[in-house]
Length: 108
Picture 1 (cartoon, helix red, strand yellow):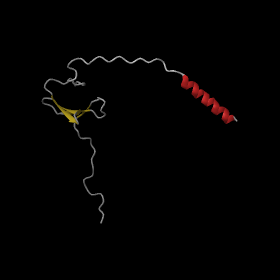
Picture 2 (cartoon, rainbow, N blue to C red; picture 1 turned 180 degrees about the vertical axis):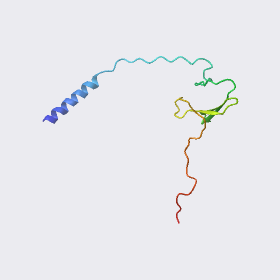
Picture 3 (cartoon, rainbow, N blue to C red; picture 1 turned 45 degrees about the vertical axis):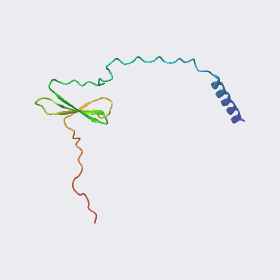
Picture 4 (spheres, helix red, strand yellow; picture 1 turned 180 degrees about the horizontal axis):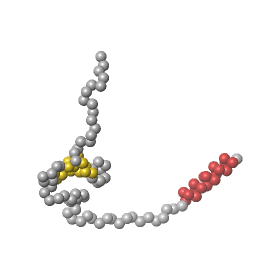
């Protein structure tokens, strides 16, 4: 009997919730068009010093790293490892992982 009472109570609650109408919704206005010339502009600007040579490294058309070679200096890399625009400086592309180049075990 108790289960029947709970079942009826749940059905009445769902019926009451289904009859409530949502508030009147209005469409959002269209966003303004972008300013002219902004489609060709890069979204990220990297400040460089005068005389630095910048070489973007692309993967599938997206810049994933930038090689910066200062005049009379050692080149370094700016790498976007996560893809969210946080560039990290690295002095080389070597990540330090080494695999053994000698046999560990030979099967006969």
